[in-house]
Length: 84
Image 1 (cartoon, helix red, strand yellow):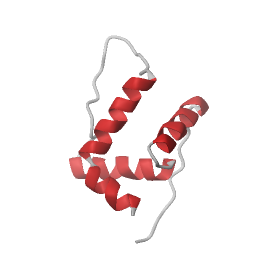
Image 2: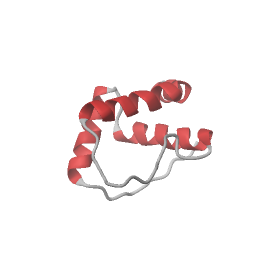
Image 3: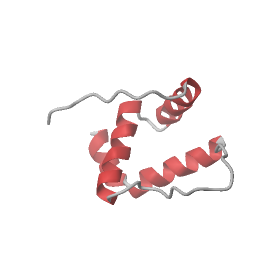
């Protein structure tokens, strides 16, 4: 399978936090993004709820970990394929 590059611009602190989280989960950034993309394609949409709220808020570490765990458990098969 041929691969391609994706270039994105994100907040430096968000990148560092995400890299640490993914590392704790045994993933690198590329694998985590691939899991998200595969999950989106399988789900035929964003694989988690996105909604407008009255105010913006940031998730704390426990909430982020919970969301990540949920995504990984819902897409365990794709994760296992990528982990090989």
